[in-house]
Amino acid sequence: MPKNDNINNIIDHKLFSEDDIHQMCVKLGKQLTTDYAGKKPLIVGALKGAIFFLTDLVREMDIKAEIDFLDVSSYGNEMESSGKVKLISDLATDVKDRDVLIVEDIVDTGLTLDFMKELLKKRGAKSVKCCVLLNKEANRKVDVDVEYYGSKVGNEFVVGYGLDFMNYYRNLRYIGVLKPEIIKLVNNK
Ligand SMILES: O=P(O)(O)OC[C@H]1O[C@H](OP(=O)(O)OP(=O)(O)O)[C@H](O)[C@@H]1O
Ligand SMILES: Nc1nc2[nH]cnc2c(=O)[nH]1
Image (cartoon, rainbow, N blue to C red; front, side, top):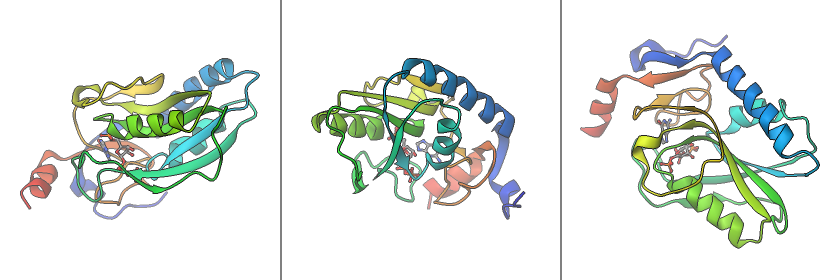
């Protein structure tokens, strides 16, 4: 188990343990196996935050599925959305007439998810749904449907299991809440 250096300096408390996350993946995987039975969906992972969730989730799904990745970003190194979502790297797969399932680590303002859903719909996907690990409803700026999610979270900045703080700490096995004083430090910089 890696010892992330200085982790105690930035994490206030653990929110979801490895086991909590595993249970969420199992539950969502079962539901998706039922709902996508007989279909061959294209699973679209949103880079970079969704990498660990996607790999755990798809292995709980007993269906024939293709996997591709889309890299979009609106945060850069910051802790607040710039409000402008950028397409950094596109899919290699044609989504026309496909059932597409977007896999995301978190939906916060909803801007990133809304951008991806609209893009894939415009390209002629047959259906576009999403499976998100964490749903931060309090901060929503756009009304976007979240068809599947693992857990709701409060309006706090979470880190680990793909979720970064200044591009680090994605490789924590659990999800923790960032210390409020770190947020203040970054915001006052
Ligand atoms: O609902 P929103 O306010 O749009 O926020 C959610 C998005 O923010 C994070 O991505 P980020 O842009 O930081 O890129 P990353 O996945 O590479 O960390 C996260 O992974 C989601 O994609
Ligand atoms: N790491 C991280 N990225 C986010 N993007 C939007 N909300 C969050 C959050 O709480 N944590």
